[in-house]
Image 1 (cartoon, rainbow, N blue to C red):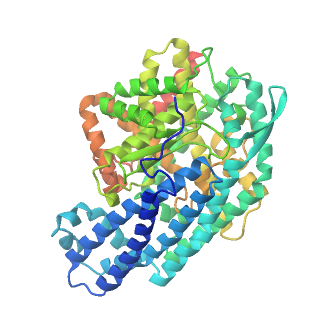
Image 2: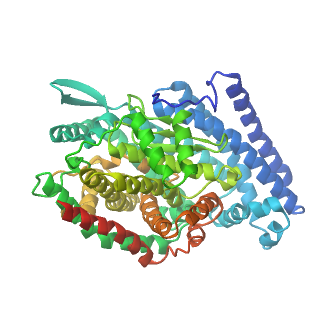
Length: 589
């Protein structure tokens, strides 16, 4: 079965007439929007007509721009040295900064209206985009002048965007020197990191040691990239009037500090339960000082649960069908239509992601599949992102952009479907393996994510004063892991370079891209518990929830299911479900 995706639905190639035609049209449309703004945003005489024209132009433009940019970025994600893809991506990003000026002009123009709600009520198109318009008006308080905003946007392309691309190139092309199978080899970083899931204990440790050694080749460059990005974020956040990078991230996430504090409080309370899980796993693997980092993902049980890619497809589709036929058909089509690139190889970025291509009502999924059960759940996770995008297909482009915390809900919900359905049919040994896998994943999303939040908070704090050395970054990461994992991990075998291999730290527009995963897991757990109570009647409401995530804040989305996300008890309730599974795991062996 083909493990490479097809991008033909976007464009046949960069040289194709369709790509070249759309590229030129995109550049022209940017100039047209700039010209329109200069002409129509001078007065406030016809607000309804002006807002309608702006919304229509922007929806049409982003359909075109994202089609082009996605094609470049998707090519780059599987071939980091694709020079044409890199050049096209950079040209689009550079030209895209020309849209900053009319965007700022519109937001400032919009902020004048004290009767904005009344104006919106006069038009169906404006009512459909109420959330977008009201949020744009609120952004006024954080806007600089048009010239300053344009300058900052252009400087980003040679600043944080360039640093981000450098880091992706470094990790995508890094070859790890490793001695396995009786010979010295050089393997891509993604391949070596995936060895953490191998059944051979010696291989897991060998891969871990080789991985850490390999980072020395890129540690200085990675540190420079991280310092450059975080330094830029601190400067721009201050200039715009945000109290901190975290405040900006929360506002961008349509989430408040009260919600974050409630969730973090519950997470911190749950850490001792996770420590017991790690200690038990360490005991079963023969470790006496806690679990070494290289055995965090060690497979458990006597049964070797491995899958071919075709078997993974059947497994996912079958168990998605136990929830809904619509979800199963979506997943099956994604495999059949070659929306997934699953083969690990040199030049391909590590990890996994889903890119929802609203412009063609499709998705593309990248993973690095090696056959473990964890790889199967990763595919289910990314297909969940894709299904979320499918639920938004009938929305306008501007209403399809949802915040980071909600982004992880559908993906983790799909993981939960797979694991819960699979465990019902499993033998005792297989059930143990699935339970352990689920708890390991939960440990990543709660404990490791908590360590990442601590790490990023400390990095921002220190970066206020000066750049951080590689030594400092490694020490902060170790301290953060010790705080989060406690005595669950062997303190002699932690991962001081976790900051170098996680791309999330290198997105200037998505700082603190850690807590959204915890939000997604715990929100999805709560929703799944609701599904178990209500059955099929839940499914329609859940699809509706996904379809409106682009035009509501997080509190409003949660309220659809009668959830109060500012209540610590809600988060505790979801964590209690995990803690029950931890106690079950401990009692099984």
